[in-house]
Each structure stands twice: as structure tokens, then as C-alpha cells.
Length: 135
Image 1 (cartoon, rainbow, N blue to C red):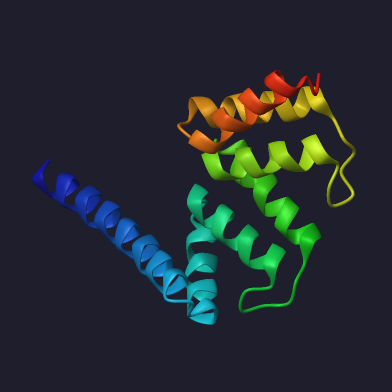
Image 2 (image 1 turned 180 degrees about the vertical axis):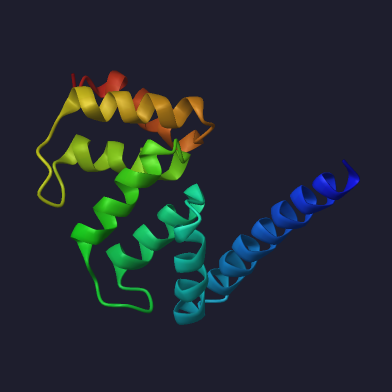
């Protein structure tokens, strides 16, 4: 039983250490190194890796701009309930960006999910939508 606990603890700690290293490299603007580390996490289906890889593809940070790939990454992160991906996909559908049609119902659904996951900007965007009557 102790061995099982040790193995679980070791792998859990290692996964958090790897994603934290990737975020640290991203924050230092060392985008190429961050990209390599996020790709490793992406294979582990780490939800936050989809957000960072999406940002890097969308803005061309350390790689060529590829908005189609960015949207695919945001969509996968949204499926895993990653709050930042949900928020960005909500904005994409709200504004009809990156070859996605404007779809207010889908935008509201994604923004509400992002809000429930704790994304403050989603709360503010929903308030703005209702206040200014985008519906």
C-alpha cells in the first residue's frame, strides 16, 4: 500500500513540476523552450497546456502563427473544462472569429461555463453582454 501511495505521489508531483517549469519558461518569454515543455504536457492531456499552446499558436510566440491550430487547442481545452479555453472560445463565437460563425447561444454557454470554473473576465463579459443588450 505504501508503495502504491509513493508511486502516485511521485507521478503527481512530477506532472505538476513539469507544467510549472513550462509556465515559468513562458513567463520568461523563452517561448521555444516553453513550447517543447507544453507539447510534452499536451500528450498527457494536461488542460492548461492546451491554453498555453493555443496562445502560442494564435500569437506566433516561438512558432509560426496558426490560428486554426490555436482554435483546435482551445476547443480541446474547453472539452476538459479549462477556464481560459472556455473563455477564449466564448469570445471567438461571440465575435465570429477565425472562421467560426457568430453564435450567441454557444458564446453564452461557453462564457457561463468559464464563469463557473472561476474566470473573472467571463463574469465581466457576461455582464457586458446583458447590460448592453447583445442578445
